[in-house]
Image (cartoon, rainbow, N blue to C red; front, side, top):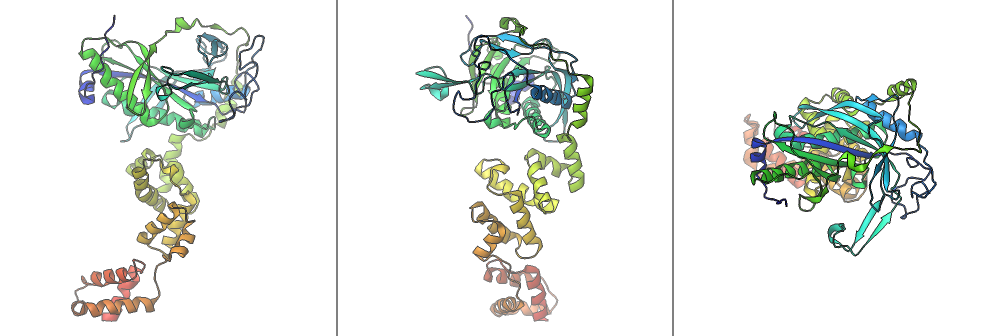
Length: 501
């Protein structure tokens, strides 16, 4: 009988004494109109079991036909990951029973994937580039979806009953499998997060998937093992299944390193198993003992002929690839004249797309970065949401900056305008009008406020006449207060000096 230990070791201590090794399997749901092997429509959120055919339900006698667009998308992904594309490859049956797999096997690829032997460079937050070796990218179909009713946190344990929706069964997937990721050390969680995020960005750039993790379009299975030193043999790995956010990928790796270190420190042994990630507690729990390849009894799919993409077609696809995220970032940094640090901050905040859209809407690169990375970045952090989830558009931010550039509002007033936009009061122009926030630039109104301020502080006028310009700030401050911050500070300064002299 194996004893289970769940005492966590401090993360810093764990990575000082053990060398972590990662392996990451990322599944991306392809954005095709129909399923992998049948003409059933693919649509998110449909009524359960309305997007099915005899093939996706696994009915006897139903024969599959390969989706050509899915093959093209798989090749696009393979080329973007610097993989070789197989001259011929075939599908295999991966045999296992689970209620959401109606055929009792999954049609996948085993020893002959469509793409193989690639690599991907990922950039970490400080600009360090870490290369992840890709073993393979292969095509397969998704399973259906089980819903367990009455159990804790939607788990099957303790559930009163379960429901199965086969709408997702048969949706085309590409699974990307890394080679062991070694040498990351204490930065292993960060490397895992950056890798999955880089893949997500590539999927979107290739237009092969919506790549929305909250919808399950991209899911990561994260393998973690520990060994005493980098020279030691690989340790026993665990596989944390279906992690579907960047933050969770990082946290899951960190937790497993601390947990496995606790097991090893206590004299136990790590069990090769799947594990469940719990977002609410930040923990993993045991799932099932992990099967090895031979347990699935793979054999070639007899109902499908091999896939043999011609070299001309592969090169045609290669020539059609769009600019990939890393190259795009380098180009935009040059166009925007951002420093390396400024661009890294933008990338780490996930703000590249939104700033590009703001610049396209008419804002200067500096103005777009100022609002998204400072004021809006602060608000997003306070609300614990992503920038793109804030109720303000790039066009509205560009309009806001345009009002500042035109001198109609200053930065202080612009923040009040932004409050109105975020509160749903309309576009910046409408908020300025409705709230009466436009800068006071009428000389008559400003002179009246200046005279009041000088009358209240008569000694200041004498100091200014004597050549001491420091006190001018006190008069400007008084005028700004009197005009609720709406005075043009530069014009106020000019008028004060004219008035006093």
